[in-house]
Length: 426
Image (tube, rainbow, N blue to C red; front, side, top):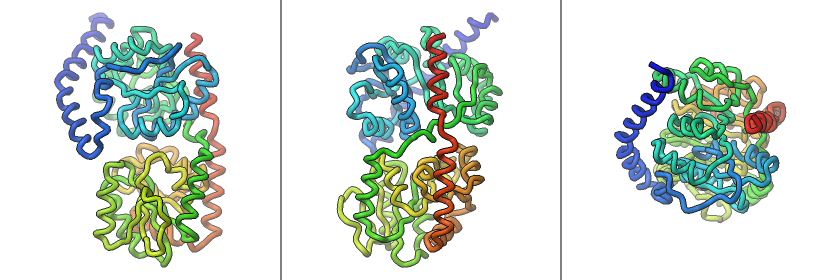
């Protein structure tokens, strides 16, 4: 069978599958909207219908949610400097990603934010006809076959930037080898974070892969975040702070139980990753007998408050900056972990659990550099946190190691921009 015909039939089969799955996707959207009503806003964008228009030439950047959006920030600012007459259309899949982009670029008229449509050929074609991007950048591992194939057919070059692929994800993609080769082959290039990521992409059929590094090392703490940290410190007072950052469901109970053995006067900042769970986590802490305040109340933290609930989005730099030590969520149960780079940038010692398959390389490097310590469970990590609060020298050594580790790995934004310019010019 001719290669072109095979690819056409493959994409046709994929589209038929999407037609069958679409009702389930809509039901899932409605289900998620029970806790987070924002999922039902801008609904027509999910089908490629847009009211907003971009003036002039367009750079399309896709960042699915919060982490990818924050990672995209330095690259977007660098692209706008390099191509000042372009507008960036920043697409997301989640309301939290959209909110994050608004907090990062809200005052910049050159950055528009919309939802990416579902990966069905007609919806994707509507999106591309409406915005007509000159080129695209997809962050990390958002590989949508119809979208990328349509871009390739319309001669819209697309770079997969800050690309990462865990061993687990690579095994899943390997179950569909023909579709994976077609999708990766539609990319103009892949800017991989590590050699291991590049190797996994190559094993799936990617041909144009470069090892660029991690753009997240280039993220600088915004002045507003550091000012907010000062405000937090004024509210908290002189009490030492342990931060549980970006926690996932089930982890908070273990963290709260471990924190019950705390020394006097220590405050736990508990910052769940997903905003729809803020009320649930507060109820959990109160049920365990803890005195809880919420960051959103705007009031000083009282002396008898034991847990300060970080019920806000886009303020993680401020939480890290005010903490003496941080436990990284998503790593205590098999969620794959969260990125510790922001903590290292501001010099906050990192304690991390056994489940870090989404960020394996950066975590291992942080541990080797002395910026992070890995623990088998929350109980061991919390005991280590209390020890670090007591021993300034150890804590300061980890803080300095974190800053040095972050500084040593900077530069991926410039390398990505050079690769992107080469693709666009070619």
